[in-house]
Length: 444
Length: 142
Ligand SMILES: [Zn+2]
Image (cartoon, rainbow over all chains, first blue to last red; front, side):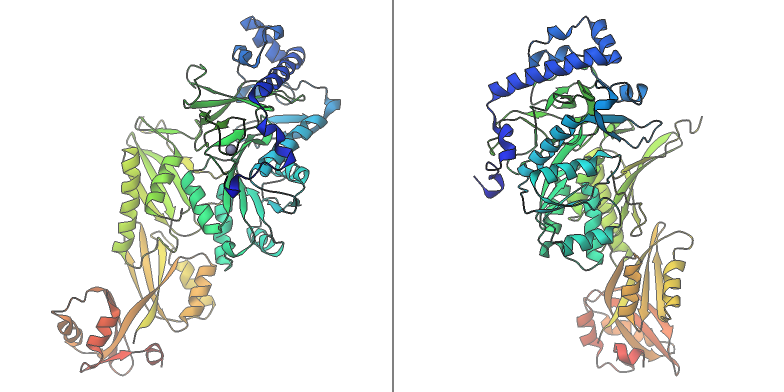
């Protein structure tokens, strides 16, 4: 077993290694409890169950989960703020909310036990990434209504790490803290970490020379190419953490450094993969939309929640010995996808193409425009030290190589624009990769 | 006998040149010579500056992509045929002029800035040629 796999010893990980039969019993019991309290306390759920003619007692094993109705993001909006809560407010000790880009935000609640379970799940994530007592862990997710900051914070404290609650923003200070405090682990979005590396560069600080050795990145899709870039540039091991507020926040699953994909903490969260068009459950190994159910969340149980994340279930046993199953790394969301001239395109495909030409991922943005009824893809790329050549022909050459790589991947023409450094807005949360400026009524 | 030129990436849009020029002006940094190579979408601004290290630091701190390039500065008499003489000497060699520009120097002299694909070979070739003087950084700003 390689050293990155030596995660057996940590007591917090015990449940990760449970025999599958025992796990199924726990899953069944937990699911029955979720269905019971939801049916009793959540009118929308009861109504949908009744419409399908399903009673809580019909759920005899975890396999019966496919009988339950789906929950959609719109359900959370429609029942804003507390319509999906199954516990009385006197038992709810915490609320979080998403920043609503369209209309109302979505609100999620937690009982004291829910917070315990959540912290425990996050602790298991960081333990799987090799973080231990004695590690100094900087949390650079935003603290506040967003689940990222506090979620990572509670989990790391539970694990016994020393937490630096840096929150988002003030990147130069973040770099200083990493250096001065001897930070060994950082948790943030992968795009923010790339930004942090840029700023460190400008400050003349080489991350590879600092004690930092682990990065736990999540809250947005990212690619293997980006992982390779981060690991090389920062001299750290980069892990995936997965989660979403609707389910609990970060901590639904995590990569372990041994095999591909992310382990899902199946005693707490149950994964299914469905065909996004038909809603049909797909066999293990097939790619589709990830659907998650909470198995231990009383304030706001979430049953068969459609995440819009594209993944697949990996059933092969992992080299780390964990018995809990894995899902493939999430590099795209069905939401992120855009259709251009009839071709489905994910930003991750464009990113992978850029990184075939450039070793270092430049800051980029995809802009969709429409002129004379034709859709155009424009990829704006910021010039950095390696992209900037002193001659026009040198610049044109790099530009052409990038556009050819993208065109080769997508099969459609793209326009690459070289932009001045720092001209594309940076994000401290999820990077906004696609700007859709298409006026669908153009030319009418 | 090479000198250092600063190259700057700028977008081809109104005001793009103003920002770097204002930065240098505010810092009291004088531009001895400059040239702009531009395309429809972007440009490369090339600068010859006495205190180029200070200028580089200032520009980078303000988020400009800066590149240093070795160029050759040649002082010739400001008269017909001076440039031709140089080019004639390079004829029959593999040396390639990627770009060049010129400015007037003191005492009826002109200073030509050359970017060669192989600056060292160019320097060797031209070092002892008649009717021209290769300038060091100090000599250029003397
Ligand atoms: Zn594993």
